[in-house]
Image (cartoon, rainbow, N blue to C red; front, side, top):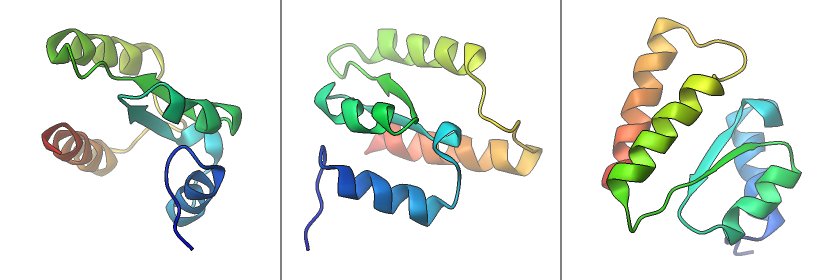
Length: 91
């Protein structure tokens, strides 16, 4: 079975694999349609406008300041998340 965005199955699998509650997930995507299902599932979502990286980076930084992950991250988790975010931006 092939799962793709924006189908609900791919998000269910991702959440199951992450082993976290829906509210602990922040999903960033550059297509608004891909944000609809995870938002309905209770995920935090952020639309990243890939046509304006600088603006989107600033907006994402502000979003993260006002919507911290739940529960608060430990030092090791913060470093890991920065690495994942960095890899996402390079993708």
